[in-house]
Amino acid sequence: MEVVNKVAQSGLVTLDLETLHQGVPLDVFDIKDFLHMEYVLKEADFRTALDTYDWEQHRGHDLTVLCSNDAIVASWAFMLIATKCEGVVNRLFFGPQDVAVSRIYAEVLDTVDWSTYQGKRVILKGCSELGIPQSVYMDATRRLLPYADRIMYGEACSFVPVWRAPK
Image 1 (cartoon, rainbow, N blue to C red):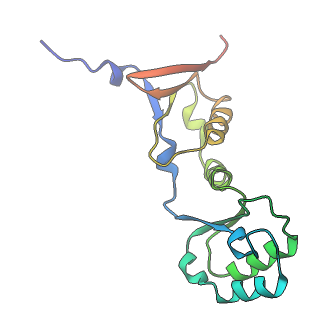
Image 2: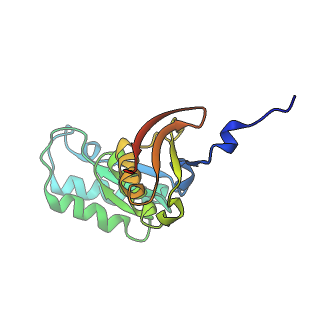
């Protein structure tokens, strides 16, 4: 008896967003650690702390800057951090890690030739090890809509139908 691989014959195309990851580490810089009692920005102390900080640990990495508490931080403080990162980090972002990851993926998704999915039944692979933000799945789905015949989520052996082109 011949074993037939029905998944291979189904014509499904799997798009694994994780494979689009560029492998550049994303570091998080929490400004609260540089504030007096984690809430008060004292300019002289802040400048000194930034001057003595080891920026080289972020060389070649992406860096996102945030303040994880409710401190009110002047815009110039973030601008000062940007000057310290110049020539050291790959890309600089503001906000939580998932927001930075979404922006990184948006840049990568801009480079995809979505027309290669014309008329295809596409599965956006789930269960990533990298923890891809939901916004990335939404963005990829939006970009597939003009091309794909069907969009699904999951694995070829177990998927959830998301969208089908109108007949």
